[in-house]
Length: 87
Image (cartoon, rainbow, N blue to C red; front, side, top):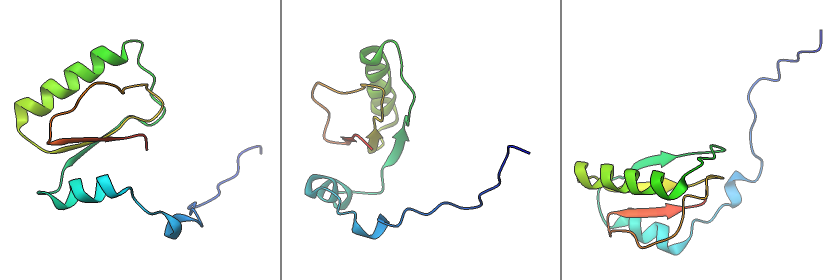
């Protein structure tokens, strides 16, 4: 009796989002990237995770958009085929 099924949730402000110019330029500069997101995942070794992730992207040759979320997976330079955003 303490559960409630709410159905779909919609963010009323979704139409107000304006992506950063850098992201738009990245998306327009080539084929659609693979999107890698971490949401609320927090890794005890964010630098190690970042290194492994960049190695995997390099091995595939794909373009990638990394959404770091709460993980602290930031810092350092990125190759031109990788763009990173917080969310």
